[in-house]
Image 1: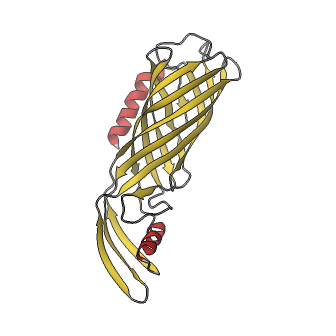
Image 2 (image 1 turned 120 degrees about the vertical axis):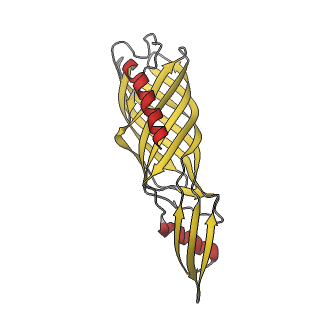
Image 3 (image 1 turned 60 degrees about the vertical axis):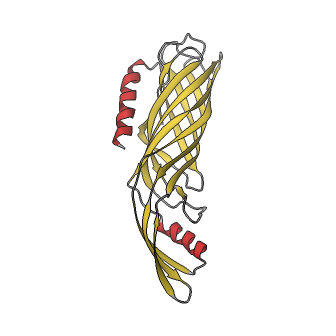
Length: 243
């Protein structure tokens, strides 16, 4: 986790002083088979970077998310409900952006990679035991596991549309689809059964946290000076947004 935070801080320090725009937006993450999650304000700054030219840019940032619940994969059973959480997760994306600028609108196509790490991690034993109970065909299950929490990575893609109400104020709408995972090996036991109880000791060495889902955001962009869509672009990336 420390290396992700260090990378984010170095990136922010390198580009913040060159920002031509700033804004405030609200982002939400809807994970696959998980619970609705939100970022922790003000510990989220995104859309920082620089332009290679008018049409191509590199962006980075960092967000601290409060994850309500994420699912797991590569287990010998499946669950439609999240098996870990709630927790805090640092999320650091780096993306290549194709930019299309108009008189009253900007449209960006984005894609890249991201790193993430959850801390204050915990198992949702209510959902975990229900999944085990269904897999075993038992009436009752009570489990106890230890885990190793690993950092993860993934890739993402999406698009952003910014509509300028005036030369200095714009409304931003963005959607990204994320596909990521982190190793989360489990070791422990569970006890259960129907008329009689039995205990099984198991190890799920291949278990992973599933960081797959949609990230949506809506916000306001405020231009400083003549940095709106019709103005010439600077060498450095124009946006600085808090989420």
